[in-house]
Structures are given as structure tokens and as C-alpha cells.
Amino acid sequence: MSTEAAPRPSAPAAPAARVLAQARFEAVGLLRHGEQLLVSVVLPVLALLGLSVLTSPELAVGPWAGRDRLDVLTPGVLALTVLSTAFTGQAILLGFERRWGVLRLLGTTPLGRGGLLLAKVLSVLGVLVLQLGVVAVVGLTLGWEPRADGLAPALLAVVLGVAAFVTLAACLGGTLRAEAVLALANLVWVLLAGLGGVVLPAAALPGQVVVAWLPSAALGDALRSALVLGEWDLRAMLVLAGWAVLGGLLARRVLRWSD
Image (cartoon, rainbow, N blue to C red; front, side):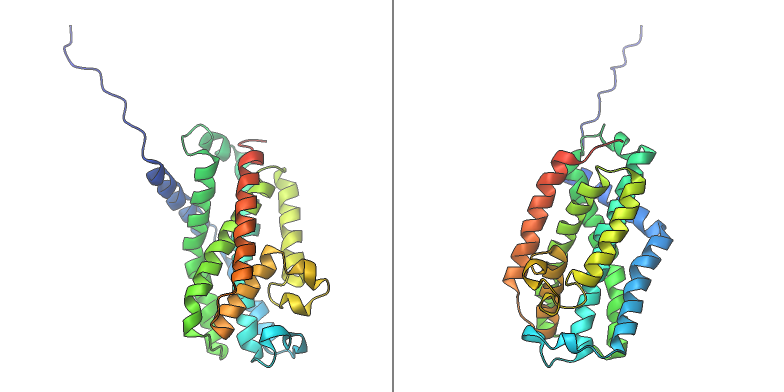
């Protein structure tokens, strides 16, 4: 009769370790989707190149009146990049992960909905370092002159914007069928890019009172205030934080692990 003791089951990893491991997995997956990265970088860069050569009298509004056109446009295009990756890309990815059964497998792990959302936020932040770097280099090449004292508020705005858009993406991609998510996520991207106060300030758009409360406009205004004026737009950041909390609470209730 064997005297060897039965192996003890290994203890589950700590919550932080689980989130970081999932974030690493998510980031690698995003980087392997070259076509998605191409769209998330190329479209904002093309928008920056196209708008930089056009006359934009609409920019001469609010605190940015009289500022150089490129200085106002580039922060908006940076916000557009965040919107593309954190919302549109994540919503579509979640929709197809549910169809492929990936989320069903994750639902059997101790990660939980909260851990999954946090991991996705961290993975998007990691990938955005590369994407925003590319857009920033193009802007600097064209003559963009950001305020150095605005880097800290800009960083906080990006973090809050990613949290808001990822949680909202989870609400969309975690509830509807993949085909519906694909169509609706792209439609929302087009609407927010054109009328959501991302590239152009909310004050320059019709219905500015409503637009200013959208997460897209809040992120665009926060980045413009930071990189054009070197200021902290506390109102815009509070709006982003509010959307992040609201989206997170809603996503934890409605996100389904399978179709």
C-alpha cells in the first residue's frame, strides 16, 4: 500500500494576480488583431491629416477661441483613438467572445465580472500607449505643440475615459448578439465621432447642452483643456468618472457569459 500523501490542491491566485494575468492575455490578444489595430490607428491619423489642411472656423469657440487649429484638433483625435479601442473594439470583441464560448469558460473561473472589466481596462491602457504614441508623433510632425504641464491631467483623462468606454462596451457587447453588436458599435462610433464632441468641441455642435454630458465630449474637452491650456477640466473628469461608475455597475448586472 502506497504511503505517499495525496497532492494538495493548489491555492487560488490572489485577486490582483488573476486580474493582471487576464489583462496580459487580453493585451496580447489585442496586439495579435493587426487589422483592428490598423483601423484604430489609421482612421484617427487620416482624420488628423484631413482636418489639419481644412479651415475650421468652428474651433474658434469657448476657451479654445483663437488657438491654433492643429493644437485643438490633435487632442480630439487622441480622444477618438481612445473611443475606437476602448469602446468599439472592445464591444465587438466581447460580442464574438460570447459567441465563441470564451466568456463561458471565463465564467467558470474566480475572475468574476468585476475582475474581467478591470482586466480589460488595463489591457486597453497598455495597447493605447502604442496607439496614442503613433498619433502624437504624427501630430508633432505636423507642428502640434502640446503643453508640457498638461500631461498629468491628460493621462488622468485617458484613464477615466478608458474606464468609462470599456464598461459601456461591456454593456453592449455583453448583452446583444455578435452581429447586432458589430453594427451598433460601428454606428455609435460614427455618431460620436461626428456629433459627440470628440474631435470638435461640444460648444461647436448643435445640442451642446446635451452633448457636453456625453463621455465622448467629456474626454475630448478634458484632453483639449490639458494639452491646449495646461488646465485640469474637473467637470469633464467628473462626467467621465460618473460614466465609468454607472457603466461598471450596469455591466456587472447585464453582462452575460454566453448567448
